[in-house]
Length: 78
Image 1 (cartoon, one colour):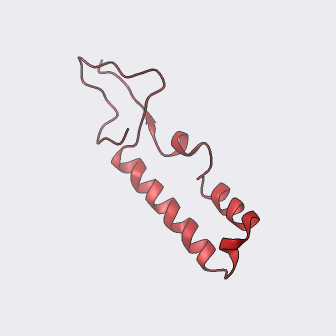
Image 2: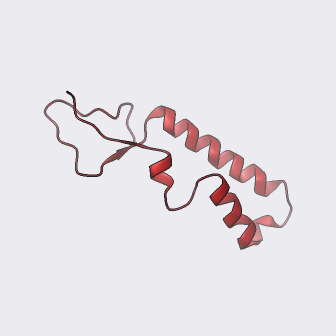
């Protein structure tokens, strides 16, 4: 979910394992994608090199754990 807050409404119950991309985390994601693209653009031909792309994706944490890095667990109000 993309939302300004990771805290759910007092009457809401987040599904188990729900993650929220907050504005701060979205900014980190945006920066990572930008750096990834710049790193590949700096080396001509690297977009066609699957190993180079893989290295950059891993370095910028844009792999399968993307949402663990660039989101927060939803929480209920106390």
